[in-house]
Amino acid sequence: MICENRFCLYQENNECKVSHIELDITGLCRTCVYVDIEEKKLSKMKDEQIKRDLKRIYSR
Image (cartoon, rainbow, N blue to C red; front, side, top):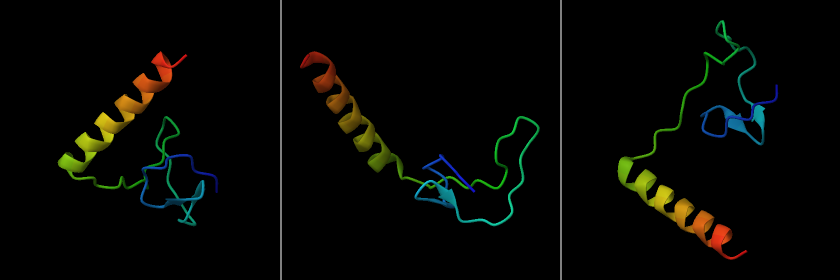
């Protein structure tokens, strides 16, 4: 099954590793388990992403 949620623990190479999933009424996966990223690392990753985005925007 195709899965585009790269933050789900069960997603690998755009595919779900789980053979049977449950969807909620809106069609979202109820089986999804999000990867836990510690706050310090998440903050660092956000800062790096912002710097890359700003560099891309202003280098035009």
